[in-house]
Amino acid sequence: MTGKKKIKFPLKMADGYQARELEELQEHFDLESAIGYFSSGQLQLWLQSNYNGDVNEELKQLSGDEEDFVQRFSEALGVDCDIENFNVGEIMEKSKLRKKLKELFPNQKVEEILPYTVETQEQLQALYKEKVSKIYLFRNEFYISKEMSNVQFIGIDNPKVDIENHDRKEFLKQKIGFVKVDITDKEIKKLVMGNYESTIVGFLDVLEDFINVNSGRKE
Image (tube, rainbow, N blue to C red):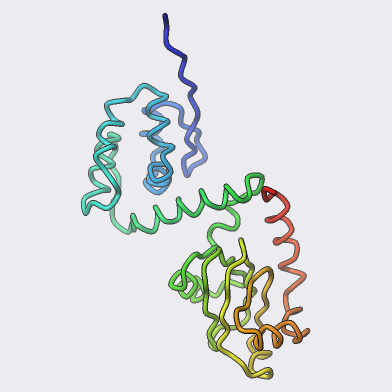
C-alpha cells in the first residue's frame, strides 16, 4: 500500500519568488525570510513535504539561541550568506508576532501593520525614535511618557496604557491620540476622553486603518 502523497507548498522569498524545491530556495535565499519560516515551523514542514528529511534532521538540532546559529543554519540549507548585521533574536520575535497577528486577523495584510506593531515597552521606545505617526500596541501594558508627541496609538487586543502627563494643557500639546486601548488611570482616562481636541488629532487618518485591520478579526 502506497503512502499518502505529500502536499507541496511554496515559501515566498524576499524577491517575491515562490520556492517549491530546495534548489529554488537556495537560488533565491534570503536569511530573514528563512529564519522567519524556521521560527514558525513552516520551513521544517516544507522540507518534510519536499522529501528533504536529511536537512530537516540538521535543523532539529538548532533552537535559534546558539551563538553560531546563523552559520549552522545556512550550512544545513546549503547556502552561503552574509551573516553580519542580522539580529536573529529580533527576526524570530518578529516571526512569532506575525503568527499571532495572523491568528487574530486572518484576512488582513498583516505585513502592512507588522513593522509598526509592538509588544513591549522597549519595542515601543525604539519605534517611537523612528518618528512614525502610528504605533499599534499589541496586548500587554505600555507607558506613554511626556516626551512622546505627534503619534496615534492603536490598540490590538485591548492593551493597557499608563500615561505620565496629568496636566490637560501639556497633554494637549503632545498631540497624541488613542484608539481601542484601556487607559488604566481613571482620572487620566477622563482627561483623554474629555479632551476632544487631543483625541480628534489625526483620528480620521487612523480610522480607516483601524477598520481595515479589525474587519477581518475572528469572532
